[in-house]
Length: 118
Image 1 (tube, helix red, strand yellow):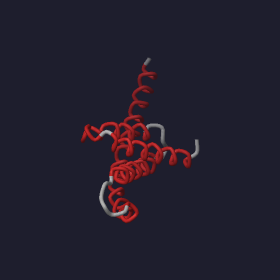
Image 2 (cartoon, helix red, strand yellow):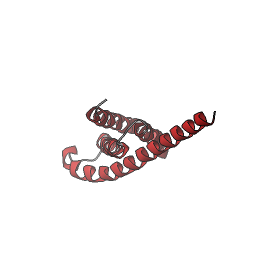
Image 3 (cartoon, rainbow, N blue to C red):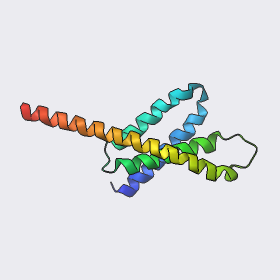
Image 4 (cartoon, helix red, strand yellow):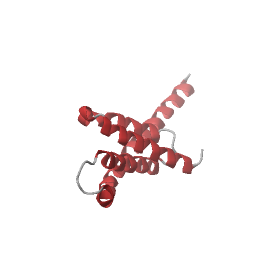
């Protein structure tokens, strides 16, 4: 699968999970758990986990803020601020996807060493 499709997939997954987060406000900070798992899973099969994670984190954060906004000012007037805050989400997504890729690489290395020992 090309990197373009992986980036598009990360954007869609992030946007959907961000939107779903606004539908379940009773979960509070527990919503971070599925978001973190999503980022780690996206980092597993990727050769570019940092880029995939950053896209995922940005779209997750941005869609969460847009979908959850209930202020009186128009949403379009909030886009620049939300995009700036979503940059922090991109950093978090980058981190969790890289961690996911590192865990996957470590697991593959351990499986290979067990196979060599057998």
